[in-house]
Length: 504
Ligand SMILES: [Zn+2]
Image 1 (cartoon, helix red, strand yellow):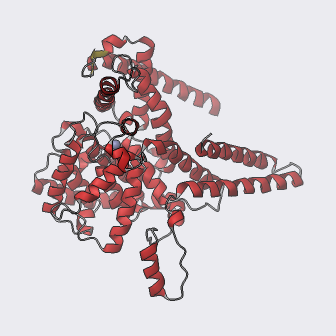
Image 2 (image 1 turned 45 degrees about the vertical axis):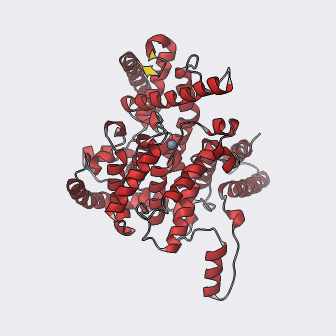
Image 3 (image 1 turned 180 degrees about the vertical axis):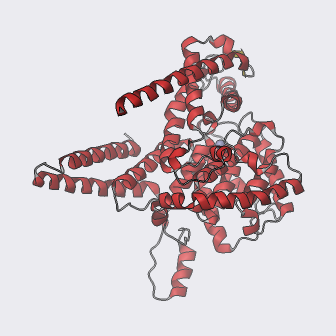
């Protein structure tokens, strides 16, 4: 049993104790209610301590410095502590997320208007193929554009005032975008290339603007988050950690088998930044840069899928505390940043089918190339992904059900999303967030239902036009999208009828 399992079971047990306590609170025997209250508190305490241990990987290396001399303590802290300096505490910020979002959505709409007017000028001056309006859409398809980093980094960094705030030179930024693209194209991988990097950047940007979280995080946190999103798979070789470890690859030996790829992405990126021509952060103040670098490293390392379960459990537990306790424990904003980036990284299945299916095809081809290598070089009869025998439909259903769905579920709870797509259509500024829909809700359901329809009725041979390299039959698959739409339509009618019946 893993720590995450224990944490999950403990959280459920605590929830049950709290439920029994509140149901007995009115007319149950007072002494028993009191005991249950104490047990609940004790369990809360244990849970809190466990989450704390799990969530802050840097805590162990921190030193508590108490000194009357402000200068000395500041110097000691800066020299010996890895703790990033923050203007406000993470806990108070996290607790106030809801309040901030509700209060700020109107101000936000106004600010957006002002900023977007300025953005239009930028795309006109730089002759970019898209403007920020397009990049604000959840349904944006990065694969339709060449050199995606050039316009997405320029426009998104500018939209969050990163370029002006950190005095980034535009020529240096262009050099950086070119070098970043070269790194992503180094191994000519079908999926983990510059399209994926730019897509994760754009999706992270959407998560920020659609949730108003940009008013909750500090400027350095937003800069670190967006930068991490862009660089998180820099120099990806198209092979996974398991393969690199198994084959005793140089990278696995350098990083002692620990988050091998993620360590490489972060490390090689900071090496690139040593080159003056590419160092977009050269004007950042030294202390800020220390915070920035430490955040970027922890964000990129958290994209290792091995951290998925613990990340989701940590977010769920925070939510449990937020909902049930007035005294919410410290909820690390770093965990929230890590969850946002992780969600953006696995967001393909939450996009419209036509966008999603292209990336699904590419990632599966990349897996199959690894499978081919395993067969040829290591005579592995049962490679992780075998292009001849892997059931693509079940693979996608499993990934959506066990990874994508839980991630976006917990994220939906955390974020009170004001869907910009919706707001733009309605052009209404309202604080009633229940009127908005989450941009990913429908497409995630539809994509999952489509695969289920295929697995029920589909002919796998007709679905796959070619195995080497993998080509999916898009026209054939489209039939099932239509079938799934009908199913969802019926289901929502059914739910509607059910709700009416219950409320009348
Ligand atoms: Zn990625």
